[in-house]
Amino acid sequence: MTRGGQGLARVAVVVRAGAAPLWWPGVVAAGTGVLVPGVTGRRIGVLAGAALFLVAAAVVAYGRRGRYRALARSAARAGKHDVLQDRAVTVRNWRRGHRWWLLLAFVAALGTAFVVPAAGGLLLAGCGAGLRLKAAWIGRLEQADEVLLWVRVDWLRAGAGRPAGKVVKGYRTTGVAAGDAAPGGSRRRVAVSA
Image (cartoon, rainbow, N blue to C red; front, side, top):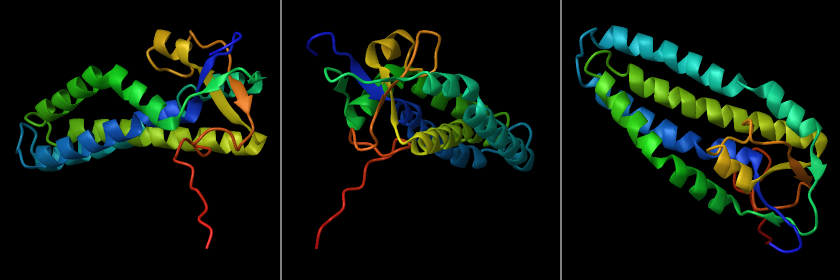
């Protein structure tokens, strides 16, 4: 970075980075949990897990939306010396910073299968689904305002990868063509010419 530029990461990409590492281990833990009868029995475990899935998905998807909106409303335009971080780098950094928490969550989800089969895994999967829904909502905010939202990378390190944490003082914006991620944080599809 030169002349006071900042490293910037896409907000939606940071949010979406945790979706797959929570979803897939949650599905695996839930599937494994169904094989164990557990203390409560499979039927109660699966029903409790389904309820936990829905609650977790809703809480994660709708949590802190006011904070995201406020930061988006007060966002400043990114400067010409700001460096936009690639989607793959943002995802890798988030996952590397959270790998031990993700492993611990997976082990805990597997461990709960001996008490309440599938419930812990479905809870974990619900958190992943909620992050995916939140990233999609951020994408709709970006499309409505015709901007992409970015957050300073150094604030992500200080706030453990939370793009709406207390450390984050504001967002930056660019046009919708900037970066290599589409609104919502997914990979940008490149049109193939015939």
